[in-house]
Image (tube, rainbow, N blue to C red; front, side, top):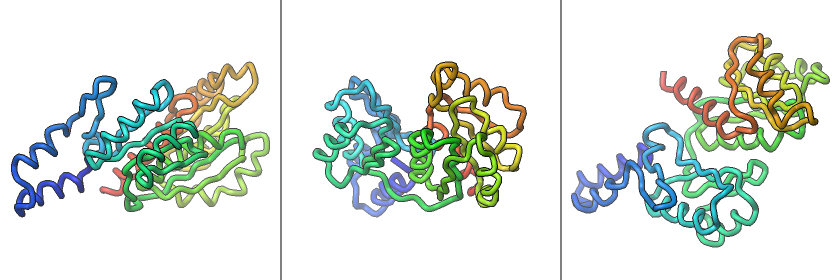
Length: 252
């Protein structure tokens, strides 16, 4: 339940369209709903401005469908990350147009409403192989009310590709930089801009990259200031953080 949904319920009570009992029924599960295998945080949208997010791997098809059903019954929103084609088709078959699919980002949403745009996020990748994580970040930002621009394949192996596109930095409120291998790109980007930079290490690279550990440690050890680092391949976390920064800036 988001702020607008709660205001609608309270207005309906005031205007007599809902009884006290009906209002209590809608509000009684506001903090969370216990469905045994999960506790759905219906309050998260109201509290943080971010809908309930469900990490899909490890959950059965039946569990995913039940989470979506409970969310829609509450007229809520949910974001499912790392979804497979099979899981999407299963949800689509159960709930039709209530389900949206972002295949490059591996994200499925149910019940989401379009938000007003509060600001702009630039999503930058070192290489083409980083795009799946970049799309997870970009779609998350878009869902949470950010205009998103993309700048792909501008890694340090040909830094002229980056420097010829520095004009895109100026219109951004936040820059998300995604890189594997040695993870050098966020340091370079942060050296060119006064915008906050969110660095995302990816598991892209050869053996000595240790599945993204080399990139993670490189980003944590950056000599450029103004960088925050999220976990390996965590595009959703980067997008959520960028949206929180943008939305808080918009309130001022």
